Length: 348
Ligand code: SF4
Ligand code: SF4
Ligand code: SF4
Image (cartoon, rainbow, N blue to C red; front, side, top):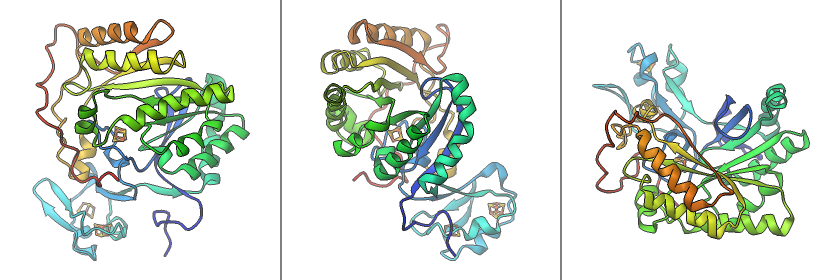
């Protein structure tokens, strides 16, 4: 039996989900496509289910009625009853779906399914009326879209042919050629700059930040060489104890000012929250950021000011996400050392 979670032979992309009516990932109302597979292992990652490059079974505790049918059905003996629910032995699980087929309450669910470019684009154009009325469009996000470059390019190209605004949300960790092949069909580049200190970048994301910075500088050159109208927005996650120092924000601002030479029009500081705890629980991952609090309002104001001063007047700086009121207290203690989420595959 061939299912849509088996690795396909033709050009297809592994997609985690499509989020409609998004107002967070570019201008207007957007449909955001979350690709599966990411080269980084950010300790604060909000989409841990997007990191592995393969479909992945998980257990949804709120739907489980405790019938134990899944345990009996698993041919690999990968399931067991644990104190907190159903435990999945990920080394034994082959993602065969037998448990999902017998589960009466859809509590065993697969993250990720394969789409052909045509199938995905047909799904996305259904929201065209919202795009047209709001100045929105489609954003490819993840995970990392540049990890599936042929598929991403085909999707972007088809969307452009249909006159739909396209945005590419990337962590920038990929060979330049992969990014370059996506740029001709991209209207807006959402580019993450998380940490400028090399050691901290390695500690908290699992890899060096040098390729990310190099690629962004090459995007600037690409724009100039191709007289391209590509818009660039930088995004920085503000994570208590990891990325939220004024020193880090000023270092990113200096890079935007010096290396990008007016190419960046907007810089968004995205405040951390821990609302994704349930995803880590479902994947059986002990998330080190689970008890981190919100960034305080006064700290965010300080960071926005540092960002505005360092990036230059041409860059619009704004903060997004919930913050804690000025009277509500401070940050949780800074983490002692890095610890990429367990259960994720080793970075290449
Ligand atoms: S870049 Fe970091 S935060 Fe984004 S999906 Fe990858 S691991 Fe998660
Ligand atoms: S997907 Fe297959 S191997 Fe994995 S837990 Fe379910 S039944 Fe077992
Ligand atoms: S089959 Fe479904 S409902 Fe029954 S124990 Fe397993 S996950 Fe829970």
